Image (cartoon, rainbow, N blue to C red):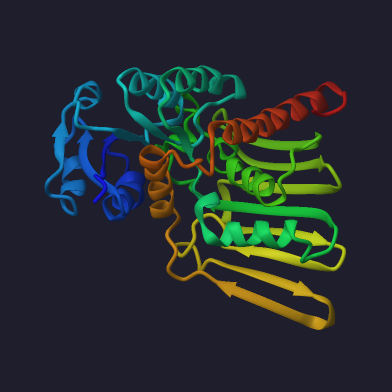
Length: 332
């Protein structure tokens, strides 16, 4: 029987406690072995479902443990690159929470360190591991909606009253585009297999130095794109692919079976609507299992750093388009 990958978690983030640490604990071929946090009260939430965890009082102590093979890093955005590089230097495989960097250039030293080390290093962009997204990709690229002509994506939630949240703080790399822009851009790129030619329009609203609502219009090869993200609107998640002969909608594409039931809806001529639901799939678990297969079997990882970097390029293009509009010039 193949030995399970021993995982450590760098930081006791709430998201890790609710989702990713539990996914590591549940995934086939994975063992949740350690967590690093200086706060025993935060460690208790992890020990409640993984009582055999080793708790380290600081991050470097966990990285020094030779039995830990892979680490998951759910720290605030501005710390991702630093601790990813520290973990690689310590010989660990690394799964770091999105966004790995706050600009495309931030990815480059991590990619270079990955290449030198031969380790598996990736950003935790989980939708591409979900059968919902894989099925949508196969349908769209297989011609189920005819010629793709437009993509529309929405992701919104409201955390206005949570002023201490790292997403509302500029010093921790907060903002709607870093937090959820990766989803509306990355999913469009994954399903279509295309990269943006330009970002033609960007309107960004900010509070306290972070973007809280962003509207984007872009051009891809053969189709147009419209997207909206916000941290100040009622919950909404959907991405739609509009073709010459049909429309495919991914329903609850990013918080599958938490925000709502994961499903895809294919509408074609004659009023026919085909719905496929995915009530049991857990994209966090699939992500961990795919990561483990890359470590143990050398399997290609579905979301390499190059894919994640290209999503960040589109975010950078969005900021550039806004700045260009303010100067009265063309967008990115």
